[in-house]
Length: 284
Image (cartoon, rainbow, N blue to C red; front, side, top):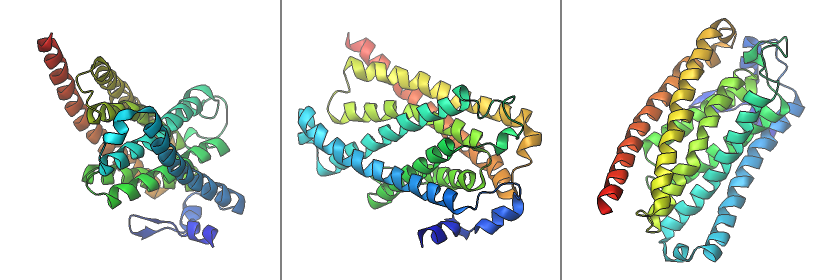
């Protein structure tokens, strides 16, 4: 039953059976039951990880941080939500770096297949776990809306799942999905800033240094990386055009939207850092 449901995955109101992809990418044998089970298992693993880390965050925080007990119920929910957000960010950023930069999977000289057609059991598992995370986090965002995030977060998560599911099911464009997932490496800094703020440590040196790290981390992982992303797409556009139609046009639309959002958030981060540094300088 679950396998059948996965065959009829609906994206943003559209139902795309596996046959749709099979007709577009006939060279890829991605409809086997083994792969479907692996996809489902990785998605459920991502969801289970989020639930476990959420519960573990509540237990450990109550034992290790005195200020945690003074938080409101809503703040505790967001605190624990950011706990599994940080866990996912660390997991996928390290995995993405390994797959793209260290392993031979996407090394242009290591295989005869086009770079955009390459995938592995490990890369599929990483994408599946990320889908599980985004499903869980989006569910909590909608449940507590808008306390955990406004429309920009819903848009970000929706576009992310839309793209990751396509890449997982088709087996195409995974190098680009992993490059974008590496940008999640900035999330722990964002979450730490919130934790320090809500516990009354906004004037601490750790808050200041974390803000500086967030600025440079965002610059590298979400601005420079996206520039390299688009350069790679441009220099490999003959291969990119081999991606099935929906995936091809999604690759032309979704990354630019995410890049614009990243630039907007970077502008806000830069303003916040300047304000914090200026305040710290005048307080001396």
